[in-house]
Image (tube, rainbow, N blue to C red; front, top):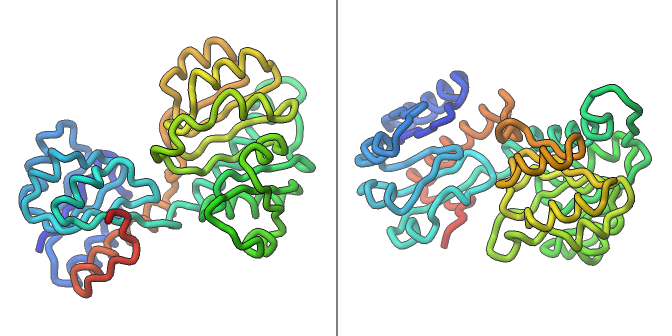
Length: 307
């Protein structure tokens, strides 16, 4: 069987070497497609692949149709909205992610962005400290938990909202106060760290009303997905509230407008950097290889994300 690693943005060499060792020890063939510049290259490469490891690469219905032998796709990372799940399901192809492998890298970036904005983006002028401020966590999954723990270590008070976690003990174990609504979370947070996925229910859900309810001087930190932001509502809130700040790891569709209108109160990283550490790169790549081998050998579908 052939396992293809198709990465427009390649893994580190150490990660690729580790993936190769796992794949070849299991008796499978590894193929690499790195830094490809044309979709046609991907369509050709997947034609005889039995399994596929990707990062942020777009696996569309066209790609799936071209992959006649494909049995499994693993996204090395938490998000999987770059894979057409319906097309994969229709073909009987299993899609998995690698939850938790990039979590610490993203959590560290979220904290760094808070400090960056509180210190006026490291330009001259009096900034503020994050110690003593209230940190809100929107979605208390792998990344959210780590952000909360790091915030507490820096002297922040932490509150969190996650409608899918009903056991208050999960929050209490970390010394985090659970709030009962998203509205209460935003009203309570000097810094709001956003970790919700982009789903039909969440797309465009973070907008004007929630932002306007935040305390004076509040900062919204988005290391999740740009699609969850109502960008028109964001611009309107920033225009009406000169104390609000927005910092993101995923540039908004109207980022140029935001930069021009609001200056130092907004910032977007040049490209998505949440998982861009050597450690996360290696962890996610090796996890993807192990999950594929486990699936092909035993049928284990532990991290399957499609039906």
